[in-house]
Image (cartoon, rainbow, N blue to C red):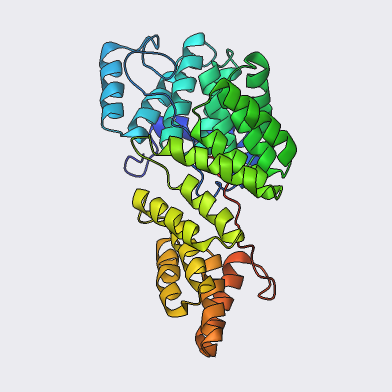
Length: 354
């Protein structure tokens, strides 16, 4: 916030905290958020309840009301400023640790993952973090592409609560991302023992088996994920999409088409499903029809390289050399891959949202 040309005390305090932050974890500032990464939301913020609540912050009544009003309006910037001002009163107190903890959750809601991580680390420097905040800290690290730091926090949580399926699931997710598929399978099987209805566990187990070339097991687990997914109030498009990709690999195109339409019924603006639909139509020799979903995938996600490669391939087949070259150049720009190396038909669909 600025007040005329002279920085207010609030702005100076904010500058000092951000300066401290930049010295506290300098490596984080160099990271970029993971593409399309979705993580579980932080706790609901309200005047009552546990971590991230206003209870126990010892705010003046007018201050508490102002903060709660800001949260109700989702005016996160104002809420962050209020909490920051409060932390300056007694920087090392247990109360300030709670303020920083709540600030971390608000920064997380505001999409400021660097600031959320720093707020939680400042809280931890005063008092131990509760498990819910530590888990959110791990998610912030993953958003910042610091998987090593996220892994450390998740391992710490799992050691303290080895029967918690959520922690095991995320450890398996990181195993998968590191291409350690066998350990991931072991963890995910344990997750399913602890929580037989966790859709994401079956879905990611399917991804692991697919990566291992064990397609029957992959399809079995994707199918179970789809069954559970259909029971959700808002089903995810990822399980049917992932099964469709496996079916495409096996040239079971009719079945794949059905699953792609199911994915699009859950989210009609899902670029990955449009792309895979274009691939199926191309494999069926329906080149002109394939162009439509491929172009739709590009419209929905201009940073998505693979549809450009497939469009270039189709245009080349149709003798449209100029259009083909334009698509290949766009593919190269987006993916930084050689046009001579065809991208895998089966992309990595192991994002946290799955």
